[in-house]
Length: 177
Image 1 (tube, rainbow, N blue to C red):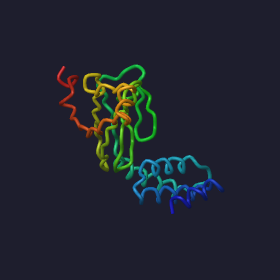
Image 2 (image 1 turned 60 degrees about the vertical axis):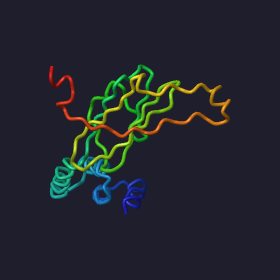
Image 3 (image 1 turned 90 degrees about the vertical axis):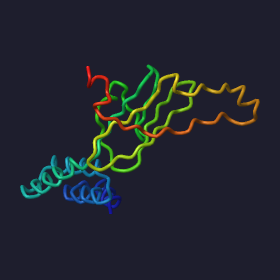
C-alpha cells in the first residue's frame, strides 16, 4: 500500500494521500519516512483543523519511537568517506544524532589504499545509541599490495566486518573531564 500511495502522490499530490502514505509507512516500520510524510501533510493548504490535529497527534506519538544513532569514529582521516547505509555523511556532522528506521543498518568508512571498514548494527525502536568505529591506522589491517595479491592469483581478501560497539556516555573521556 505504501508504494501505491507513493505513486499516487507523485501523480496527483493531494494532502489526504500524504496522510495515507504516512500511515502506511508507519505500519511497515518505515518510521522516518512516516514522520516526514506527516510533516509534509501539516504544511499542505486546505486541510481541516481536525485533520491537522490528528496528524499532529500521530506525529507526536511517532517521534519518540524513531531510533537515533550517533557515529563515533576514532582516528578519522581528512580524506575518509563515511556512509550510513547508502547515504554519505558530512564529516563535520558525525557527532550528531541521525534518525533511522528500526532494524539492521551499517556504517562504512572508506579510506584510500584500504579496504572499506563495514560496521553492522541494529537500531531498536525508541532507542538512542552510539556506534563506535575504530578507524585508527593501527586497528586497520595493513593493505595487501596489488602485486602480492596478483602473485598469489587471487584478489586481496576484505577484512571481516566488525560488530558495532555501543557505548554509554560514561565511557566517553569527555564525560569524566
